[in-house]
Structure formats: structure tokens, C-alpha cells
Length: 130
Image (spheres, rainbow, N blue to C red):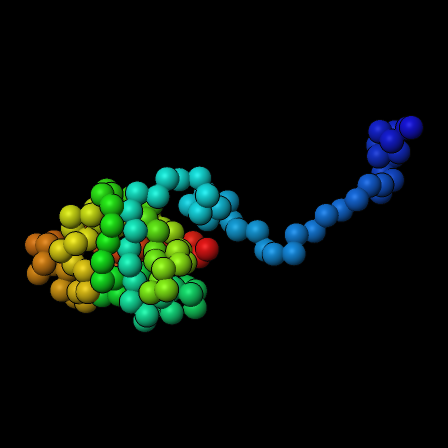
């Protein structure tokens, strides 16, 4: 009784719930949970370690296979050698282009495609670890 009046007068009542794990930024949450995954990139051990360490972009040299058909800007899952999905991100190349640059150093993208849009398959700003 009188809870609204007590709150209006500045009284601190109720419960505060604090999450045990940090929350993802809204954009990262959107990437992780709210977009449909259109394909999968299968990573080698080095690429999986680099992503897991955080703060790294996914380069084509670290991807040995892919599944699915996707366009630039769509979400793909990043699959570690043990089969776990470890990250999701917005891809910079479509599936056809990605197939042509698998296991390729970024410096070789232009030779394979005739152009280079970005040096990475997924930029770290467009990547969320799961």
C-alpha cells in the first residue's frame, strides 16, 4: 500500500537484479540473436584462436571451407575446428567471392577477384563472439 507515493518521495524500495555476465552492446546483441544466419565459415585453428582472443578481424587465409549462399552484409556463423560456432558476423564478400579467396592472404584478394573491397572477410566491428 502506498508504494507509488513512497517511490515518488524518493524512497528506495524494491529489488535490484544484477546480471552475473556483462551484457553485449545493443549492436552486438542484434548480430548474435536477431538476424538469420545465411552461411557458415569453417575456420582453421589459428583463425579460431585469433577470434577467441578477441579484437581480431576474420581474414580469408584462416577460412578453409564454407556452407550456404550469402550476400555481402549478411550474417554468417564462424565454426571452430571442433564444430562449435564461436562467432557471428556480417560478411564483406558474397559466397561466390568468398569461395575464390578461401585460404588466401589478404594481399592476394585483388589477384583472385580483380578488385578488393575489404582486406578481411568479417571486420572485428561487425563480429560478435558467442
